[in-house]
Length: 212
Image (cartoon, rainbow, N blue to C red; front, side):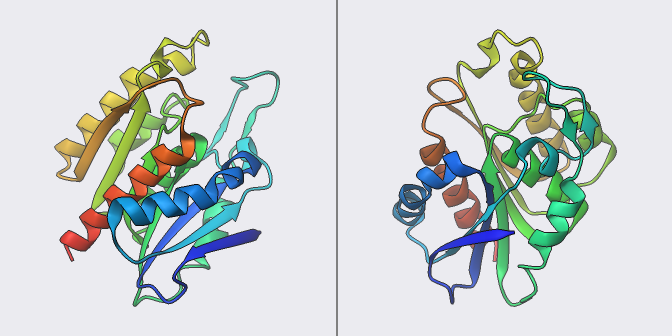
């Protein structure tokens, strides 16, 4: 696992984000935007994922794009990420974009290591995920959700369900008393990923600090 770090290494607030090559192209701008939007000190650890569909999917699922299925190896990825969270004096938040956003939300159901979740345009269309949310209890204090306002208009019939699923997820979290927001951004899934993720982390960071 390769990790890239930004911000203040000694900060008490640690943001962890699974990334791919495309995310890394905008990660420095994202870090700058987080600092600008939150005005708070933080350390951002960007964890490079080897196989996106395999390593971030919580369980196996059939292909949605092309012929590549989802491998269901998220548990292994989470174990590696948790090794970065050993210092219990720090507040850890997990977040990401697209399937990494879904992974971040799922991770908060698997462990109480994370104080907050920053899920920007998460892949809420992933088969069975909102059913999983309904049957399990999340273990963090705050969740940020967002979606582009054109994402549910996708031609792919599976990904087009993302709007209904994220509204359902937001409702489930609110019912459980989780501090949560659902923000709508302009554009489709491929627009402003770094800006959307920065907004997500800034909200989650501010909310966790406000609640101590």
